[in-house]
Length: 190
Image (cartoon, rainbow, N blue to C red; front, side):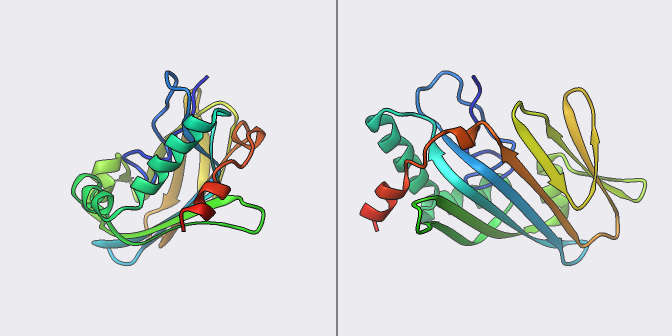
């Protein structure tokens, strides 16, 4: 069974379109991931990633603790520097917290150079449209303020080139079956 990790080239975080961890016993997953990308100019943009229901997919205490440590490492200063170097995004704000029900959520906001960021992530501007391709993963639902075109293996999100706000949300229905198991560790480590 594939699990989605919160870290990948797309989302600095912790991020979406994510790496799978089929051969490990614990892995960070999220119930819901939202991306809001504001294009300020042809050169500059701001992106916000919001994760709701971050948890470990393990039920073993040691694996849950390892996953929590991975999450804590993601928000370190060193991690922010590495993301800027490797992912072409400058992290402006990074938050991990839990609500009153111990549901862990995270938010990342960063600025980027549009051409570098789009090239790095494989986003295209073609024939006066912005095109982003996302893989179809089992048990996930996608919504967007752009047009969604579904193929056998991918979703293509399409917006007119003059669009200033690109948004999409991925809901992982499989993740929702797991208990919220990181909230207590987060509270203990504050």
